[in-house]
Length: 338
Image (cartoon, rainbow, N blue to C red; front, side, top):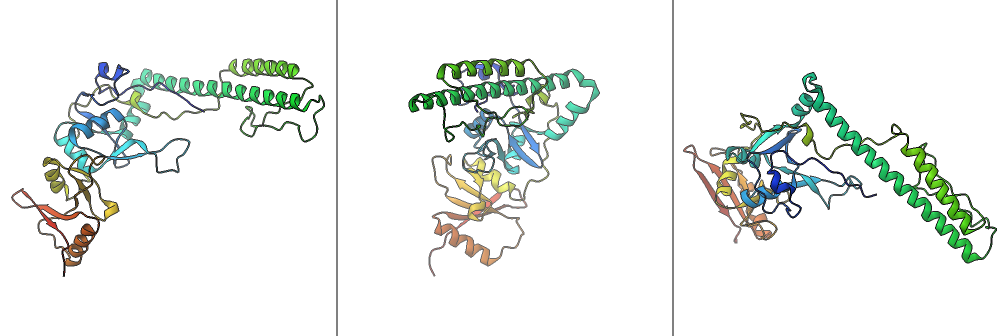
């Protein structure tokens, strides 16, 4: 089943650019600051065009975390929302490019405040409209499936050249074709293909009329893909500028970012950041970076292990941190020989 919904576009983007059918996000210049949704302590981007803009202009890659609704257990074809690191969120806030938006608080304020009943009613009405669209698509595809089954049955009888179907030729219910009461629909065998076509048309008309005429029989409850209709129409006057969970390695991350590097989470290489000289889609990483405090002791085995690991994957092992004076120093370690 292919479903297509018209979702509201983000309110912080340029309307003229977003309405153009030729715009794929490659030349989008949104109104700044852009929203960075905070959900469960994670920082997410729900708009693919904003994510494209941040990657192109500010070297913010992020990690795709969204899965397809029909295949939630797979991890190969991921999409929005795109999760960014706390360091990336803090950098965007400091540069005035983004602001942190608390999704849970916004939902509570929009849905529970009695002073905004009209906005709440509009939101519920849009959800109900999408639910009816899903119901209508389901009815149409169900009727098409029924007609295909009847035509197939008629062709089989015609090819066999008999008007009395054998026991083996009796039609069975379509396992994916259910009525509203949950029981599988059945196809009644008839004696000729013309009678079959008549029966199909009568069943199609009666079933469609009976279902469409009852607007309250929808069993679908649509979970919206975005919550843009619940968001305020404009960014707050005093955007949140403090992120509590920024790690101690943020000074090194900011230092590398300001020097033109791209960075992604380095968990698969046993480090904090994987450092690229350009976009990760075009370049291999050059460094495995780990940020430490200026006075933090470092185990010698960690240095040796990081150096050997980096050399084994053809990368340098990078240690860095901020000094008490505020400047950042980095050291590259490579395993040469004993």
